[in-house]
Amino acid sequence: MTSSRTFVHCLVMLFIVPTGGMTFPSASLSAEGDIEPKTECLATDDDYSTFVCLPGEPLRIPCEDENGQCPEWAARGECSQNPAYMLPHCRKSCASCISLHPGDVPQIAPDQKTRHLVLRRLYETQEYLHYEADRNVETLRKCLNKHAECTHWWANGECSSNAAFMEAECSPACQTCDKIVQ
Image 1 (tube, rainbow, N blue to C red):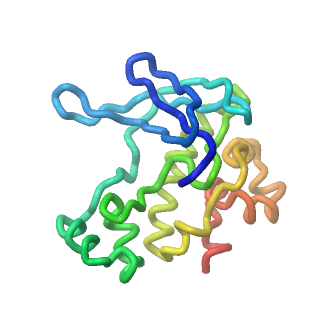
Image 2: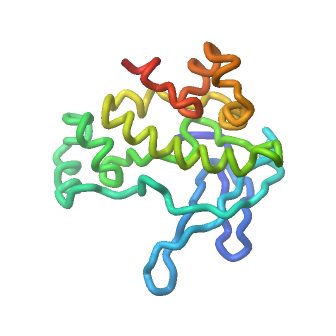
């Protein structure tokens, strides 16, 4: 994913600082090697100057390979020769991990009343995109949130009240990828 904004997740202070591209880690390893949930920080405005951090959860679809042979297959070019299997199942080796923020813009949560809904939907959407990519790998390329407010709009009922726009512009948030990726 490319973007003109990068966010760095500071593990000690648990905040995000704009720096130029973007990453949104939501889990890290404890001293014992266990995966621990981390705080997920969501921007509250579209200029990404203010953030609110909420308790996160481990990614539902972690960035890992589902088969021990994935690195070998990827080295042989299978990510491009057999993308239907490789991209959803060899995510780490093929660099096809599914972000909590699908699309070119990270999602924002401007409304305090819906922030927890937005965060929950981001986790649901990440899982949904994995299953949709397993159905049709083109989902990874075509099904994107095109606006920072997509998940916020979903929380406010726009997927129903403004369905045509939302299906075209915010299909991951509305979970309508099957309508744009046949």
